[in-house]
Length: 258
Image 1 (cartoon, rainbow, N blue to C red):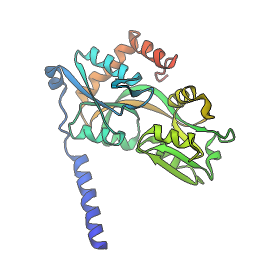
Image 2 (image 1 turned 60 degrees about the vertical axis):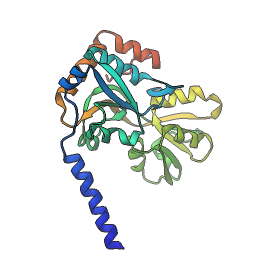
Image 3 (image 1 turned 45 degrees about the vertical axis):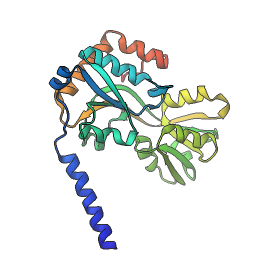
Image 4 (image 1 turned 90 degrees about the vertical axis):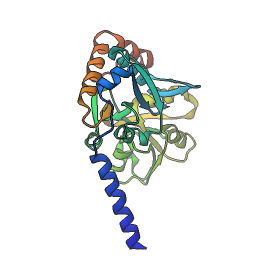
């Protein structure tokens, strides 16, 4: 049985490595322009960045990507899928671009090519107990985070945390804190601000930054012409006031990286 498990694990690792090493079936910039549309994937469950209002996909990142597509002269076609599958889908050629609040990390950059950052933020600690503010206050505590995020990665680095509970969606992690199943929740600063404003009776309080990060969209690894065009379009909307208007609409401030 152990031999079978070992063989199965080795096969799984080989398959994963082969998938990452294989050339992506990504569409070229020329193919996207000829088609007249760019297929963009997001999570659709991370307000105020990307989420659904009824059946309508909306949010800061949706507006930014729509503006980028307009500058590129193509129409966006949106796909909403679980956060864990977004970057893998680029390698499989399922979409052309992902925009879903991915922090730029060395590990992720091995699998995809990141565009220039479209905002800067960071992970903050949210708790009901006002004594829980900094990383040191998480010792002996249960902490909720979303699966596959940099929030999870950074909480795991903190010594003394009693338990890290990860959830498929960030809203589930927030609800775990609201219902008292955990002592703290680590999430994006702007997500936390909105959650506190939307649920004033929940008793949640925002503490310190756990880390700061640059957030960017991504394309399939090595698709340089496409990422260069996305960067050009992003720079254009930042220069002409479009980005500032979108940012102030959602956050009442300009959230670009300084």
